[in-house]
Image (cartoon, rainbow, N blue to C red; front, side, top):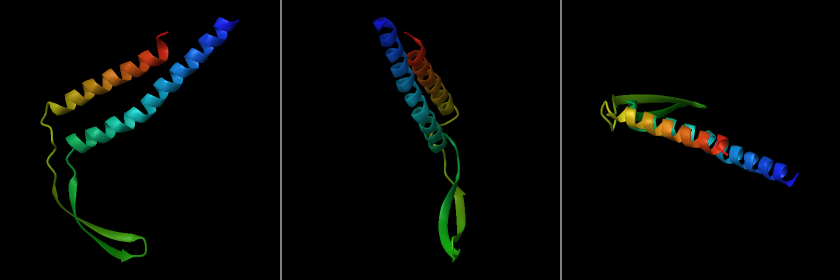
Length: 92
């Protein structure tokens, strides 16, 4: 009876830790990938037009930090991270 309760508590803790890491980690990887590997327009100026209305002017495009091989490193790191989270949640 005591072993069942310990096993259940261990499973709950594993899912709580692994799930929390997964929920916090996926947006982190998306943010880092977009910040370092995706070109986006640079904001030149913002002008307030009316109440809650802002006119934005963009000028140029940033150059991504990484070349063509950079996104593959992020993909490999992401899959290693997901594998670690799955191992935490499912390996007893």
